Image (cartoon, rainbow, N blue to C red):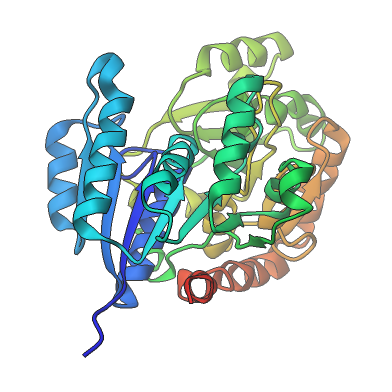
Length: 372
């Protein structure tokens, strides 16, 4: 009897903490488990309390080993614990996702050269501002046996010595349609405004909430009752509030903060008219590698207005699931809102079809082909 292949996933993020890399890793692990793969996850527990983390880990059908934070010893401990787990488990494959996980991968290759590794690239880790760290990260990526980028944009960020000499698989992010189908959509969330515009994600320059606010003066001339709703950790909320006040649109912007759990987002998706994802590439190398929230919004029939020149281009089917615009051009944003409002019924039917084509049941097949 042939035993199930053993896989170790090393991720820099994992639920119940927030973060797109962690959400992707969690969905990947669930999809692998459904394919009867024996899994162990190695990850820290950030932005969450110990009780919530322990309860979450106990609910998973696979082992989750957490890296503790111990000041300056944190990263040394991660190397030690990862080395020990690889030695004890002797996995058939190692999947690396997130910046420090890529670095760990290059270390592991020194001691376990015969265990195949897959490096998953999301975007920002490829384009670090520090030249030394960037070169080291590129070296680490190149030591992996397989390289996966979540979008064509992310793959384009790789240096020539990698992308001209290695095969880089483009495997988009996926959504858990079975899970999303259980999300509540009528739990009393009301988003005022016509149209009600929505962004979900950390309130930060990369997510581009400031671009939507800058477009509001033009939007309000045609849609005087439009309102912009922002859901997510309010890291830059004070800066955005100041921007809205400067532009005289503060009464048309609402910060809703963080939802209690991911399921609650279904109520917001269902209550909005248009999802806004005008992500902006940052000078420090922080970029949007894909934009999984676009697919989630589409699943609930919500059209997406997404930014060109970043990974969102792969997440939006222009003209079918939404529209792509230059986020720096308010008139383009307004025109896209017009298109969404005029083609509301058509987009509401087509958007879920696009989202469902990215369900993890299909995405995981590509990963399994790489492992084979």
